[in-house]
Image 1: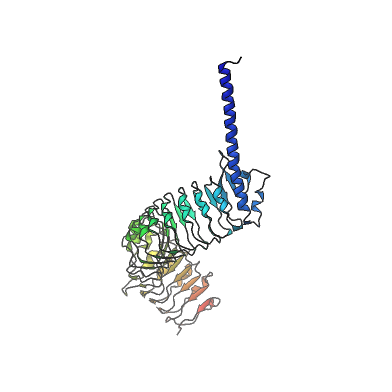
Image 2: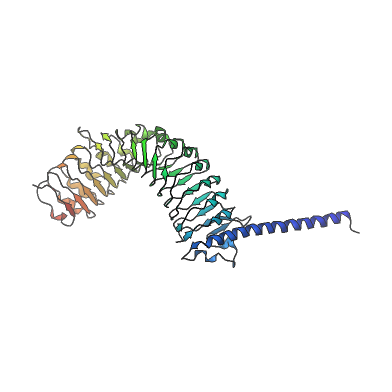
Length: 448
């Protein structure tokens, strides 16, 4: 007769065996859900490279190409099929991959709408659908993906408005919707995305004011270029000290830039308010933004003297002040060229179509040997072209047309072997065109 202890041990062992068996059955059934979902996804794909050929019954789904499983439960946690020339539509069964944390289908040819069933995946942290041909709207119920850190649906054919519900994604750090056909205004709820580091909605059809952006205090990247935004820029935006890139290009903004812009944005690398209706002067405080690499102020109505101390901007490679009302007619207003000689990384310098007067500083020949393009046409610049300009060995574009330059064309220009275009037309130059320029595209000059 078995003792009570022996009976208890036998029952305990039996219970444990049943529990383990039950657990394995549950895991197997759940894993089967993932397998069926992936096969449903595969059935709607056009896969010319055969990337999903491994998606069959001959191997464990966790070994399928582009599929990554968690170690503990062997459930699908990542689906990564980027850069695989895959077409077709994305099956709604993607919503059945309930352990999914990351989807990357970028740089393919997916068509059709983004399945709203993705909104079921409350563990999802990254959704990257960039550079496809998705159409339709951004699913509103993506707001249920409360753990989402990155949402990248850029470079598609999406329409409609940015869903206000996106404002509930409090963990979101990267929001890329650029290069679509999104319309409407920015929802006020965008201001709730307090974790946001990068906000890029350029190349859409968005309009209205951008007041909701002032609450995004941790932004590194703000790009709203090529839309129809209007009004003035809320001053608090220029107080977001973390900002590294501000691109406001090609909108309908008015007003002026705060005088302390450079002081409050110490991390700024790119400032691009070009193609708007800004007025006022270029802030002198930009001298303090020592990390600046690109300044793009063209096609506005900026005026006055350029007093920025460019010598402090050691990383500056691009400076475009063209097509404005800059210049005061006072002495030495081209002295900023002297300061630019300390910018050893400068590649492009444009200040054409302004109102600059005075003699061309011969220090223009002391600009960085890295400089490739100089445009200063359509001003009132006088003086002569320095022969030392031959030192700008990387120069491929030089336009000084429609000014008041005198003297002769220095033959030393012919030593610039990379020069592809030179325009000296509309000046008061004398003498003949140097034979060393015979192989260049030389636009007509007024020669006497």
